[in-house]
Image 1 (cartoon, one colour):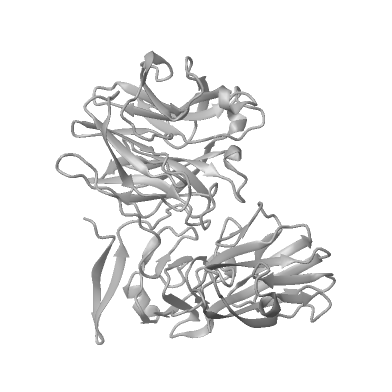
Image 2: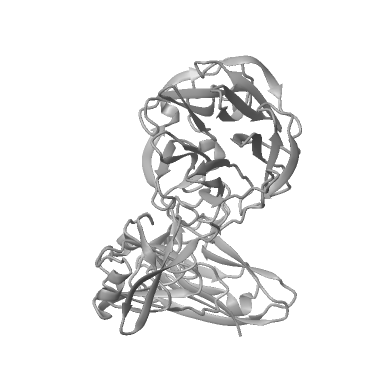
Length: 546
């Protein structure tokens, strides 16, 4: 069934049919509380689906610092459990002392034992010292102990272990834009024979994953498509190739890398992969996703439709956007009406709101008491003090004209300000809860004038008049200036500077008008003067056609 949502008739009232929509699966990305990548999905004997990804650091510090593997599982594709960290570099006795470099893993099962395969270097020169480590456990998501590494391999990464119907396990590894396969011995830790180069894999970059459907073997992999990799698949009648029918079945995401796996669960096949949706496209801050895949009669794979977020405001019992209660269309819902739709009174802990909607929550029934207004975002209500408080809700359409993403700095993941990027990993720009800010959060800087600006590129229409506005604030005791500009464009009308000795502690609004001329993009920047020392704030950045 290809529909992600189904309409459920819940009850009847004097007002007519009451309808609510229930999502059949968790929205993408399905892990929101941390950055994850390279998902390897498997279904084990307990009937649950398990995903073994790598972990990206926040804030981003590059791929070399990746460390600490988590496991996630589900039995309904809606609620996912984070089983916590199962392994990190400090537990790898033969690994590089500096840690990091815990890249894409995989897991296999044989005779009551789970085998966890991970790449990790054993020396400072990681390019020459990669090993494929093996950890084992009698549980799928805990108790893993490092047993060593697979001998007889050169410097390879991205292990995949596929077990055929006859019980024979095969190891696939990548390196230098090539892929090799080999049988594993019964102990699952030694290779059985010589490595066999896998042929027919056009444009392979890394990340092989092998699965079998009917009598066809499939090998999926990221290609070397310029700038942003795509996912391809190849087919064979033999687990070690040769492979043919190389086709793209997943287009590029918003980050350069791609890496994935395919698994069947409860009669539906799924592709697991990663994107940069939660970070705003920061390469080393990825998030894992899944979408259904479909096969043609000849076994070829149809293009996968990438889905993001939700179609309607969606309400959850968990602060991590799990335990979904349901969705709401435009309308007003008191406590009784919410409960008819499966919304527990005082039970809402997080909300997902797609673009085009606004949600107002009230602490009392019948739209009374303190209220909170939310627009496009993934909102953890615990962070703003209304977790398990809301008793009535109004949902309306939002028709904002602002061209700036995250204009009030509400969207943030792992303390990063989504869509606003620094030329280096910023430790100084953060969002802070501010009751006088446009929404709930303002952007906050504490430090001196050495930090790089925080910026966002926005598309413009040529020869068009625009109005740009922003609110600025400084704390008392600060010196220097808080600045917002367009990267030295239109300085005569749209470079806004707040002197530290002016109205400390109060928000000051600035506004200017410019004509875009021949420019097709503009870079909006939050920055401070070179002599700045103290605390400054930005909020409510608005860019609209005049």
